[in-house]
Image (tube, rainbow, N blue to C red):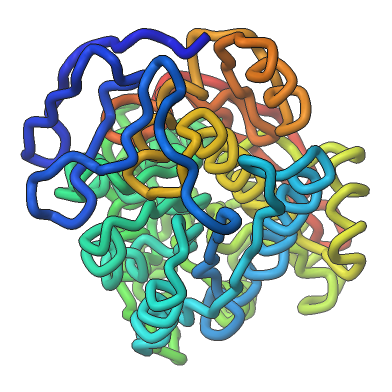
Length: 424
């Protein structure tokens, strides 16, 4: 059966009331006009099924400083859709996907891609990878009544965004990663910390939460050197940080780390004092000499990519070498399909209204086929994902998460060290 309604809540400054027949409290207006979606599901399952297959779009980077995120995230989506369709699809039809580039914040590629996908009437858009990119298109997408779900956005700003209840994410916010990375550095003996920070929503959000964690542990942030998206020279930032002689250096960047790392090494910085984040904790074995990063550490939201999941991903892309946010992308796609199944609709707002319900307070399941079997038996479901438990609150944020802590080996490859779980 579908779970009963829980409560009324405020999201993004708007009060959203739901009738007793709705499965969730997270209903939303379709186009910003204040009306409830016409395809809102009922407990009796009487909502109409939209004509045609469920159509999903992706807004993921194939160009720009985040392009390394594209292959694993796209593979996660493609794998989920492959398994969904093998299990019978959604509402009796195969799901279709439309992949488009997001670029980065130095271009307007994301806007162009979003316009194209909205013109093709996609029900949901998975992406963007970057919080900064998402900020450029979130109003366009949710304002059109289309569901938006990011597998990688971590900015706390989205928790209170006026998104009509249509923005969700499967990655924990920077509050969690910043807190854990700050504690990791202090736990390794760092009393002083320097940071090289990308000046966008992602970098500054992480920096704020790292600072809070370090200072709460009686440590000190001695320097916070900023750079902008599109910059290609980082000597001044490296010089500023090295001159402060911190015990630890946190590099809060995307692909710019490939240019920053050699500059730090040239200045004699010990790699064991370098700390990375999800935007740059990559396999660098082809970029640097052996041993360049040995002992460096970093964090990545989500559970470690297990061997079985990697093999399944290779079935859709056998050239993957990084796994960043593949699991979160798989989970996002699966949850959208499950919510559409429960809603018996492909309407973005109707799907959003079921997302909280399929993520909590039901019988556990971990893929579309097993969850759909439970739904067919009339049972309520609680999807727990590849990346970890996905339990959404009324803001579209996950309420608990897993953070992987990694350490680089002599081949400049990040290896799993431990996982830390906690409330977000």
